[in-house]
Length: 64
Image (tube, rainbow, N blue to C red):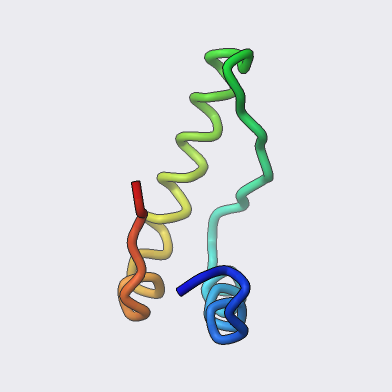
């Protein structure tokens, strides 16, 4: 399901409202500091771990 799909946006919003972890936006590039990459990685893993049941119920996964 793509991000421009109305159903996806509603379901993603529902999961986000249930989120316990605060995730901030981060932009990383080849010049990013190691500390920034570490913080962003921990936030991403925390979000998916903390919201696994909501995400799993929708059949979502991280696409590489």
